[in-house]
Image (cartoon, rainbow, N blue to C red; front, side):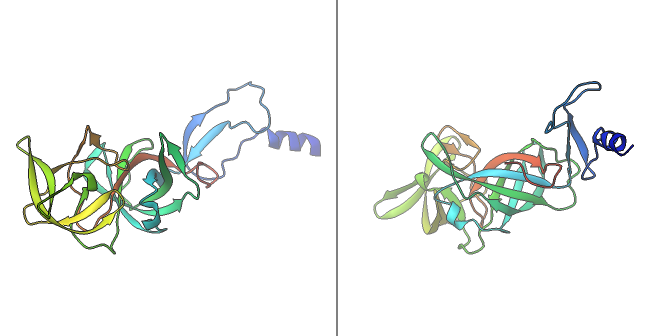
Length: 226
């Protein structure tokens, strides 16, 4: 009887958490082997965003550091998160060294956020001087003056600026002639939204560089996908 009860218990699947069924990988009557993942569960209230941070920026990223998150599918909503994990090893693609950084989405109004949605996280750096973040490649020197090249009415225009520090491939600049929505003509390897050589828009004052990725839930066991 004990053997029969043990066999019956092994034929039952028990969920380790309360969550949403993401996929079912076994069928009724199928002979299965030990270790098969029959059902995948996830807690959709705990979402993570993994982004690649360039090696020149990774030293400025810390655990629990705040970030502002924008989601392509929800352009009218603002989200926030905190750095939950920084990978100890790098991932190199085409000679560019990046480090995966996992950001956990915070807040309570997450009903419309779904796994797989594309998002950009701007990791905040409150230690830097407030100003505009522009790609360093957008800066030019003319007659001892520093200028940033922006597009206005489709034409490249040089705007005089003063620099106040750098964040990897980005430079913090100040100028009363810069406007929200100006398009700086430059490029970076750590930002998702690039179109040719033009970076669309300036970063927010006191912010940090943006990094792109997709949301995913933690797995059923509570551990994080690798």
